Image 1 (cartoon, one colour):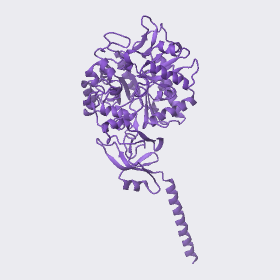
Image 2: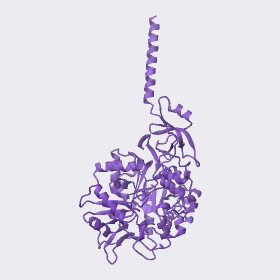
Image 3: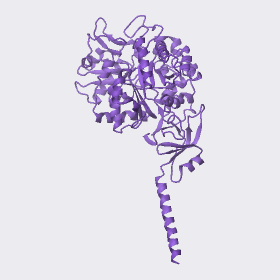
Image 4: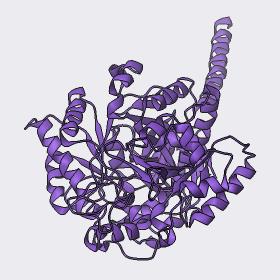
Length: 569
């Protein structure tokens, strides 16, 4: 009898503990099931939809049918109804200047309409004055702005030193050019940065002089701008952390979960690393030190630590720039600009940032390091120069090498077969079809202007291009970027090479899967597949189902990084 009672007690206790274990398991189940909307996996060459997706411990556990998702998620999982909204992989920044996001939070935004108020010199000055008043900027303090676009100033009336001196006689003023390749300074800012009539224009640089004098008149571009960029005001670590939070939220609001710092000077790299070491990053940041910074970058971060994330940060390769911007008339072409150079030069072809032999040596240095290369080339002469350098360096070597050409704006049709043969990925800049088409039409003529960013031909040839905003050159607006690739309509309403339009799905590929391949991260990002990181974006509408002209009106509702919401509208 006692033995029966003992067995009964053991059974009861076993059942009680079993119930508690089940309750504990339910409480600890962190699985989340998203359902009830369009879930686009981006895994196929054509759109593929899943009924549900299971997220667990920062990873994608399953995508497929709702019934199977419920089983895999297990008891006690969380259910999130998309209520008709659209879920996609998080967007990856094909190319941009992340470090500037830390600065522009405290600067005056001066993009031209519709992105900003900078329609002419008068509106720029008025906006700067309001900014100075609203931010209680004291005498002697630097006033900074960004997004100045001289190509749309009416009647050729450009912002200059005298304009800024008259409006702000007691403050240094620096207004960064929309290309991010230059700036406009007033007299006090020139004093601060050590620029004067004795300053020589370096090779590959532009210093616009006041007519009839040798005095710098404000606009400083390309290699002449580099010393200014290197002297931009430093922040304390605490300020850098706060600026990082604000800057990364700009990306999160646009559904971007991986950002690129595509021209990393050593001080920038130190800043990004220091903040990353504190664990402050909410998105992934990939930095590309400039080719002149290789040795100092290797001293700061050992090469064995490159190409892999630590605290959501990694060095992704090296950046080389070999020409300037077409709208700034500093890109290198095989034919002259129709209206001369930025300082009135006649028979102006633009020029390479470095001589060809230096380009060859720079490309070889990166190849010998066995790291990815991103190389800025805009004009067709710059693209020719790079392809020659690539052929010189490879010399029939067939070892795989991850190379991306940044912008590649004026790629010719005969360039495309070589890109295919060499496995080079172009990262296009289709926003130029909207923002800068009229400038390109004026500077380069109809045929070249119509063929900028030839994404259709590139994809049809088998290339997998990425697309980018080049922030802060253009605003961080992923849906507007997609709109520009699909519609190719200019600011003035002109069609820009309609034969180069892509489908909305192809446009999304250039923001997700193709960009993940660019970063060598397709095993963890770019599609909604089992085992990948749960980097997601939720849109209020499906870009594949709305009128293509309405794509720009789609908004980001929520951004999720490694399974955690980092932005919710």
